[in-house]
Every structure is written in C-alpha cells, then in structure tokens.
Amino acid sequence: MQLTNNYTLPEPLVSAIKNDSYDKVGDRSATALIKPVQIYELEKRHDTEIIVDAADLLHLLMGKSIHNVLEKADTSNHLAEERMFIDVLGWKISAKPDLLDSNGILSDYKYTSVWAFILGNKPEWEAQLNIYRLVFEDHGFPVNKLQIVAILDGWSRRQAKLDPAYPQKKSLTVEIPMWPTAKTRAYLEERVRLHQLAENLPDNKLPECSPAERWARPTTYAVKKEENKKAFRVFENPETAAQLATEKGMIVEVRPGENVRCDDFCLVRQWCNQVRVEAITH
Image (cartoon, rainbow, N blue to C red; front, side, top):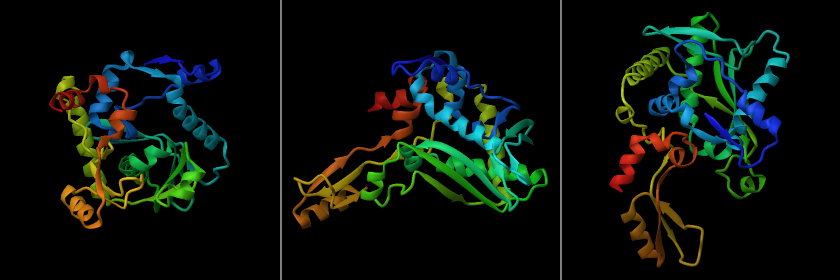
C-alpha cells in the first residue's frame, strides 16, 4: 500500500501510520475471515498498487492506540489481548480478542466512524465476536456475554439532539447476540471454504459482495410538500408513496439507493469486476 499525505499531516503521524504493522499469523485471522472474500483477495493481490491518503488511515492508528492503552490497564483476573488459534478444514485461524473479564463478559473495542456504525459493520462484528467466543470456549474459558464498545469518530452532539435514531453518545456499548455453537462452527467452515476457493480464482471470478456486505441502502420514495426538505413519510414502494402523495396533495421525491461501502470505504473498487459490470449495465 502506498501512502500519500495530501492533507499534510505532521510527519510523526504519517510515520506512525506507515509503521503500524499487523502481526499476521496462521492462515487467516478471524477478522480477515469474516471480511468479504472479494475485498480481502483484491486487497491482497493489489496491495502494492493501492494508494491511500494517510489521513484516511488515522482511524486505524486510533484503534491501535486504544488497544495499546488496554494492554497497560489493570486486567487482573482478566484475559486481555491473548492470541489463540482454532483449526478449521486444515487452516489455522487466529483470534486476538480484546478482553474477557472474570464474569465471562467478552468485550471488543472498536474505533469507527459514526456513519460506518450506523450503516454497516454490525453483522461482521456479530460474527467476529461469536468466533472469539468459540475459540475461548475451545480453550476452556466459558463466555456468558458478548459486547462491542464502539467509540464513534465524527459523532455530533447537535445531530444527536435533533435525531433520536442517531447514536446518542460518542461511546456506546452494544450487546451482541450469542449464536449456538453449531451455528458458529458451520459459519467458520463456510467462510474457510470460500476463502480457500477464492485463492485460485481470477479477479473477475471472485465471489461478489452481498448487499449487506456493500452496506446497501435501497432507493426510497419520500412523500413531502414541495417547499419542504423534510419528508412526511418515506417508502421503499413507489406505488404506496404515489398513492399517499395524491391523497395529501404532496409530491414524491426519489432518493436513489447507494452502496455505501463501495462508494466511500472500499480501497479496491477500481479492480472490482462487480462494480465494473454494474457501471456498464447502468
């Protein structure tokens, strides 16, 4: 990956980002395994061609700093930042959960943008923590509860006051559902099979990202007064919107859908056949 510095960050920050190496062990980490296969493979294959501004990677540095602080915290009778492994279909899968306390509460800390928190990530977080739980329990440590501690970059106090659906705090603890053990093992095996198969596929034959993996937002139809910005009601069905607009003497504003991860967060969209085909067909 090549770093630019268009926002002229101080050189020590750029250097810290550049030298923030990841200790890769095993065939895949749990976080790599749950990543969309197409994204993982394209990032691996085109690593030297990817150009990223250092400012866009500050969140990784912040996340790393949080984990460094946790390593220095008093975690007596806790398991913190322990690297463990589980064997799945001939692959060694590594996991390094943040914290398992003496009450069996497994916590993982995430420094993430507020919009990534709102629009995506959570299904992958759920899978990640359930894998961690399985790894812990395979090593003899029972887990009673899963939770994400999310620290939201870009959080706005004003927006929180205006919108009750917006996260109401800069830091939130979100309880994660615990899967049955059989479901987690089946999920792990499915992900390993997908990654094993993808290693031998060309770029244009990689498994496509699902709508959930693309953080897809559907096209919606807002019923509103013409002079107002705020909608009276919003629908995904255009006929329902048109009917209500007629009844209320309002208009229907089409709000096009988007794939948020593809448009704003994906580093490999220029090599993605799925994006290329959609651009041609649309």
